[in-house]
Image 1 (cartoon, rainbow, N blue to C red):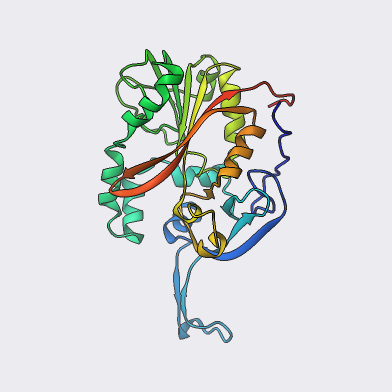
Image 2 (tube, rainbow, N blue to C red):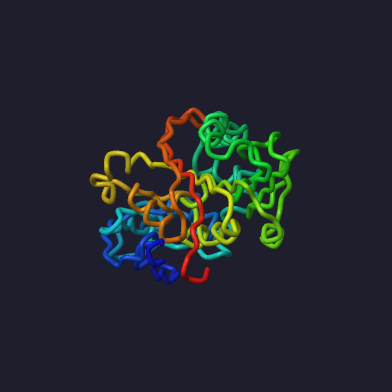
Length: 299
């Protein structure tokens, strides 16, 4: 049986690990990147000069401050600010659409070109499908949780039914169908995929509990998350090296990811570290294929 699920109390500023619930955390000062601060909170960077009339504040540029936190128990590295539902909506509404792209280009010149490359889709989907086939064959029914338009969803064109659940509310590609939570509850899926999602969410265990419920005791879950560069070397000095936060607000260690999935009621069927290239950048991601196990606790 899985380990007892940790009691994680949602709060504006995290005071416990969002993976294992430990309150044994180390902290280091950082900044929230200007695009995120503006998009989520409408907080904008300012330049403080003599006209402000401040006696004890030095002149210079002021950005939104935050803290990097790292759990001493499982090694999870994360932003202390935990966004609420409205703030997540501010950030991900029409994700990578024109309004999003225009604002991000303002703060991060060159992003528009990168966004075009990202919207063209990943080039490693065949590798994902090949990795999954020995364990599931070609699934008849697929749910992509957080799948955006379905551009990167495995087995599109092969599976008989492909559903996309995503908060961005964008139109999905032919061969896929956008669904609501209520729709998900009415179906049974051979494969649920959740790729590049839980690094964005304030409380990853909630997403995994939702996924466990959606599986209803059957099928497999393919979970994919970035293995961030700062974590690749065993997270040596990762806390003090992490000075800024963008869309990814959770940086997983192998231990924190294993702890999270186990305590949310999953057994690991197989796992892998995949080397990928996305929009011209080399990266590493964790691949986990998980099966649901009954839990003694209500979801």
